Image: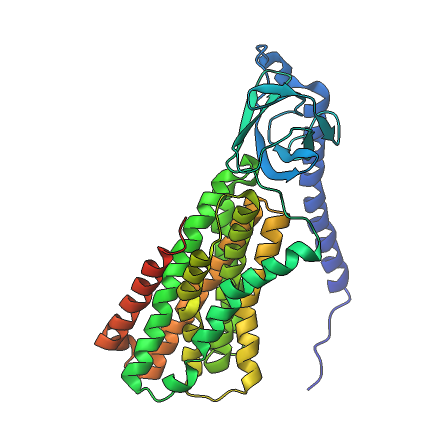
Length: 400
């Protein structure tokens, strides 16, 4: 067949339409630029001034205790640049240095250094006073030296992360050979157990994300950030998982490991931050609690692979994917913690876990052959209850 012949009059017509479309894109932008320029030059809001000071907000994001005193990282969130005039520590005024010096613009950060002789194990209160008289307080619950960036501090933190993240997942996956002989009801129980433990992690991660979002600077809009990040994570992973069909077997196990790994990243951030701030004593009992709490994560990862026999390196890779982020999170949390980034990590993890819950539930219905009827069988209901109950009860060991 011959290709259709385009009339010579059509090309100029299309070019004219493109130019008009471009013009209608430029005109609104030009109008916006002109409106902003007029607002800045004419300053019509000056007539509404009543002499009240500008709205000010200051968030403490990071505290470092060292031999030369205390350093705090603050973020300004006021309507105008803020100027720090005085700093109190334990109700006494102290000399301070600020880096960078001068007013702190909205959304910008500055380090405040105080040559204060803090006392190990004691509580200290910092109070920052701006030039308008507004005050912002911060409490150091337990003063302990902040870990430094060297191998001496990173190695023991890595060991702790391994015991909290990698070891329990590996132990859980060691049940794989024993689980391969289960029948249909046993498979339903294990898949429902996976959904139960993931459901608990979803609730736990979401609650922690909202709590941390409340500690972040108001300009980050923490509550909205958590919801949007979780939804975006869920949709992106759903799109990626369904790109080549519905995930099963090893693919589904990989998604489970990824979701758990993202949760463990946020968990590691929180542990590292608490450890650095002295807010939690990570004793042997607490570490054992984390290990017991996370063992079912390995069982959940192994459950979709019971009908296949993957090579040994696959188990090592899945263990690293699920538990390794705990080590990374612990390092970051102890060295460069900020509540908004921890909240973001937990929100992304929550979205990933929700995606896995949807996929595992769909896999359970397909593998059973009874569709939605598989969700109401005694084995499924028992697995769901056991998964949630085990995670809830063992979580009591790690809450401080």
